[in-house]
Image 1 (cartoon, rainbow, N blue to C red):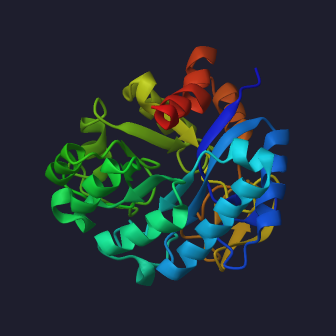
Image 2 (cartoon, rainbow, N blue to C red; image 1 turned 180 degrees about the horizontal axis):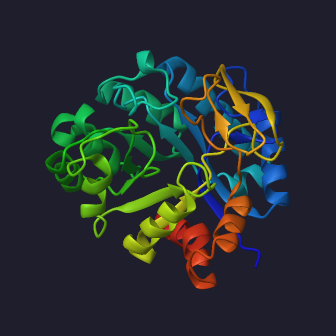
Length: 304
């Protein structure tokens, strides 16, 4: 069954890196055409942690693409900023540059809102970098969907962020150290709040082993789970060497996108249609659930 896929987190695909400092409008337009051809109906171009000036420039290119091309205008549902207000702690920062991560700052948030010209749709931040949830509330009041991610926020900090407008969590089970306390860790804290948060998962079969993906999708209420690709430029191209915001990404024969030292993933080399196949191959969920996880739940979040 082919779905009208909606992807809330896509950093690039088919050789196009949306985080390339030299990104041009024609590349964005070309990417939209390629995604449309594989069944992606709408997506959020996702920019990772970087100096504010670079984020502003990239956002401006995305806005221009929406204004100059009818397909881009239809497909780009907004911009997802994954950072820069993320935890810089090893493990939690993931593939993001730790030196560009910073505390949540209203002045920076204002600059990013202005650069987005109304297109900033979703921001992922670490609640512990936003004491009192001031920036979370500021963004939420202006129509931005705020998710937690790349974070080691305590259960109490997550609850406080929810009170200030936090609505979800980005790619649960990833952007964590390989070892954590067995009971009080970010995975269990978020699952403890699964009735209050929308939770996204990367379903490429690598970020989460299929048995864990299945378990998480059984634990999270069906209406609150959304699958995202977290795709990088390597997606759709197979094994090789690629770039994400100046970082080298190696895709092996297994299809996973990793850092050159092999210690962590650097986004995904899979698109949502590929992730749909993972669900089918491992008998995870029903066709009705696939429709919700890959399309309808994201649509409802964006259109609410």
